[in-house]
Figure 1 (cartoon, rainbow, N blue to C red):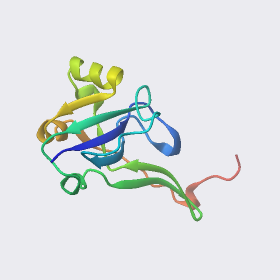
Figure 2 (figure 1 turned 90 degrees about the horizontal axis):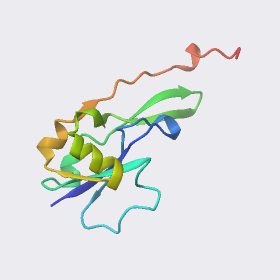
Figure 3 (figure 1 turned 180 degrees about the horizontal axis):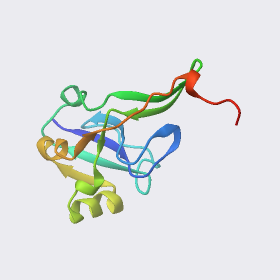
Length: 126
């Protein structure tokens, strides 16, 4: 019973920010794509949890709703990369893989502060 969690290492498209959870896969799986590693992404392997029990952390919020379109999908929780030890941060940013138990990882997760922008509050004047 183990999972791998894909996190952003840097701010990216669609409003995702460094630390945001992008995807979760149960082990074993076929692997990640060639772009899903440093410098933009990293994987945290968690040894003592299954995907279903991690779902509470992998929820989506949306930061902007303009008309019928949604922009800025962000995860409800993010990995506080600065809370990692120097060794773990180096492993994450250089090799793209950090391994730990669930309790150690959840200690480094924090709720994202998200704002919802309504269409009426957006200036169309440029």
